[in-house]
Length: 156
Image 1 (spheres, one colour):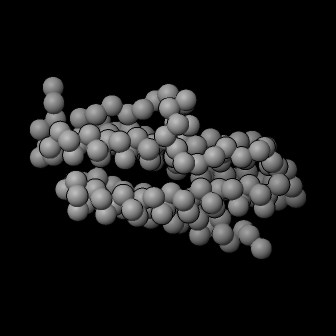
Image 2: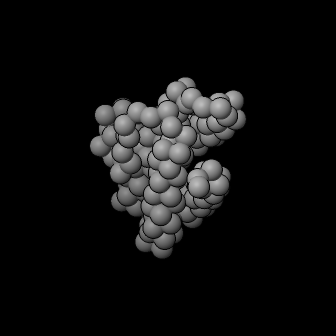
Image 3: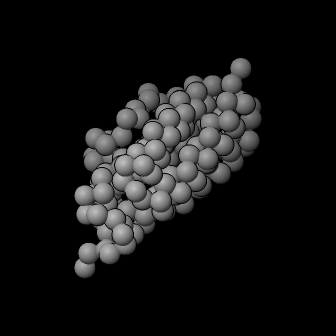
């Protein structure tokens, strides 16, 4: 049954495309963060291990919320890894256990997400007329800004 929530089918489809790209980006950041959690080595191992764990746990919740938002507007959430890689603008970096490189990689991703979300919020609000998704994306933007700030604090 089609969702009858006040969005045209075309607008809902466009919003779903935006959200599936967000979902792909979130999955890439999640995967990198989880990898860094597992493979970090250094004298502050426990601090970074817990820091990354807090990040990926929050990202896991965000991922679920993005997928559910897609379903709420009547479309299907992407769930295939190969599609995430195609949809995402984020890159998988070479493996590293160096804290500065890990933090810089994640910072770049969160800042990329922040810029993308800012652009999409304007489109979703003004062009696609979806206030619910605008609000949702604004919340995600604020989370990525927070993580970027925290990661930036680790860099010299």
